[in-house]
Image 1: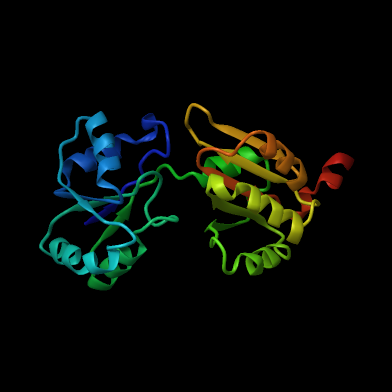
Image 2 (image 1 turned 60 degrees about the vertical axis):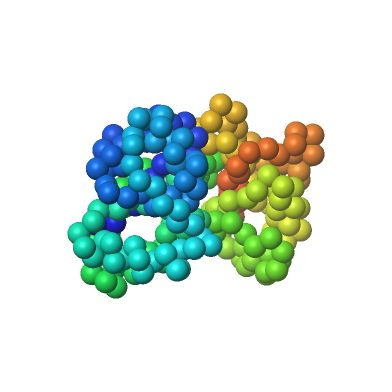
Length: 230
């Protein structure tokens, strides 16, 4: 069995009892960054074998891992925080397991975009999760597409590109849709700010963006004008 184990995005108390039990019981843990995962295991006094599994080695590591699973070994996969395969490595191995007839079980648990989406106050009945945007090539094309999208749009972004992303929202989508920006989910300095792209640009020009960000573009029916009328 391959277990997909969500790990806390910030507060270590967010890990589940089931996740802790499986991390103790499996024969091997695949970790995006073994140093980061070792801190988590040490905190909960878990001693287990770690193997690096990240975007730079996932294809070449896939076959040996499949061979181990085929012998009956139980293996867990974790990322640095959140659920593997969600803007993190993992789907290649999951796909290979399915093709090889090996069972895969994903535990429910932490992922950054869900609390950010709920905290935004935007419509959660239908949304588009885009994850991390490309740094340069293709960004403008994506934002032109987002301008036509009526549903809530969820993005992950580096603190170094928050300003750029807000500027492109303003340029290609305009100031008629509200934006919610959450940072440091479940950590000490967790913060969510909401407003138009122009208002958030003013906010972050004064307060330097720091931490890990989830940026949510509200649906068209959450425009500032409509909300003021209501």
